[in-house]
Image (tube, rainbow, N blue to C red; front, side, top):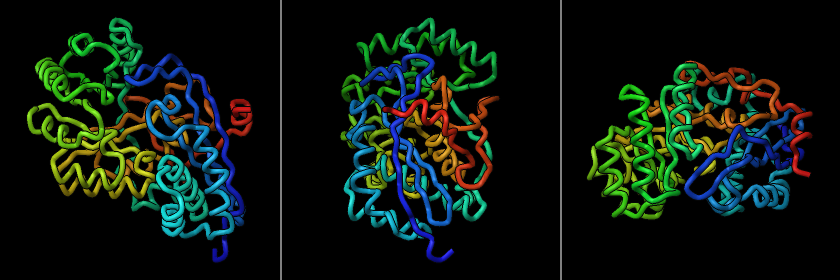
Length: 372
């Protein structure tokens, strides 16, 4: 294996249609744009990765167009010719030459791990120490924006057996309107069905105290990122004030963020996202900090397609996720760019068990949906 190097790295933006508009506090997602990374090695092995964000630049400071530019202009020339085998050394090189750009770094590490897994004939989870499970619980987000539609959708999915936990995206409306919307859905699905709420940073701390009090009274199971991500102390105050668990999502972006939050008790649950953290190994570091502090783990998503979802699933499978995952991104897509779509049933997702990520790109579909 000695002497195996990276020959070239290619990136392409893919625009895939979704089953319906997806409402968040900062944007309405009507399709999903993702950057697919293809990393070609001198031994003929190709690794793949994905960098996906939500709503252009409305969610964070990386966009599909900017990520492709960073990959093509800065990262590909930097890594070309380097050994493909020492992933830690390559990621350290990126860290020293490329500031920020965690979504792109995550896609590169995914591609490197995928290639190495294929090379050795083992899964990415095995490279990361081994899986605890071959399936992951997956909730579904009710985000049509219409209370009755969301209730009908929840009942249909419960009857079908595909999901048994639901998440609601709120924050676009006046807070009392949003709370009434959530409470109506909780009443409709009943006490045995978990309902979580993602405020997407939309509330001030004073509004959050009022809103969470009502949501707690109505039996909501988990409150995600109710206030702006930079207000770490506020998140700690809310965590200590309420019985209902408070989850840090955007606030718990990096390993450093996780350490600072754990130190002050900012959140009783951390949402782990490979894109925010800058890769899969950083997720394991974040998880270690959380576990040491007695903070529970949740597997988050940036609504990635199948490539990014499986990358997340591979690392999540190595961790004790007390709150399950939201890896439903591929279910939002009416089309896909992989040969075999993922299986979701009985409230769980089945993790591919082949070498690397265990999935293969469908080149015809990639060409069809590639942004021209």
